[in-house]
Image 1: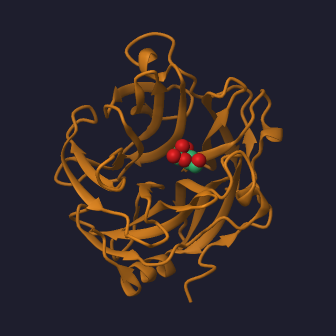
Image 2: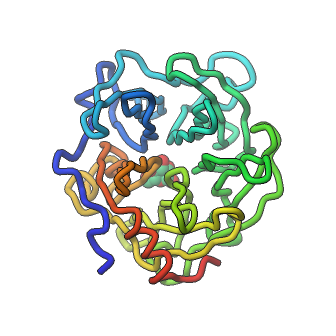
Length: 311
Ligand code: BMA
């Protein structure tokens, strides 16, 4: 039984544009972490210009969020980042490494889309660190631990020649990145055959790093975005142990099927809890934020026991 692995929260959608105290048109594709005694959400919102900013919301329980009165990240107005953020900032992910929260987000400009990395300790002060890819990259997640002293990230370069796939890249200092390797590809005539990309930052389990990713299937009625799971080796994250053959979540609720972009569930965040569950967060139809829960053992089991090839 692989369906209903993710139990949708009964109060979905958990955050919409009606909840935001400044004018926005969407609330979606949010990063979430636990910080001190609250859950912090960084969400993407479209403005009426069609460009995106990143807002911040807080919650005591991971489901009921209240937005701060001002956005958290808006396009840089000066310095090296301004040229590359001019068309907006999108789809943040947060990983805690040591005492820092590392935030990766898509920076859009006339030069294409690339990934920016910023750092905060308190979600008050934010420091832009580096533009860590050239164009065209999206969907970059950083592992919460280093490997042989190196930071590691999963990312999704654009490609016209092979289907869009997941790569791994390493860095000693968050600025210089290299040793890239392909780790996972879409599978032909499968739910993720058109493209795949990293979703939530990987979660440590006893069996390996659990990665929740998105996969896209092209239909006569446009693309369908679903979520799946893969398990990476704990010591060598470039090695994939297994990829769940079936998806774990697909658009089903009305606000996932219909909205700004229909038939989309898209994740940037999953928060593991001490009881073995994981809270998964996803944007519905690029319009609203939703949440659900799963058991980590079930997701790992899918990767191990109903696996398809990684490449
Ligand atoms: C992707 C990105 C995401 C978006 C998704 C579905 O390519 O643009 O931000 O959620 O498409 O529209």
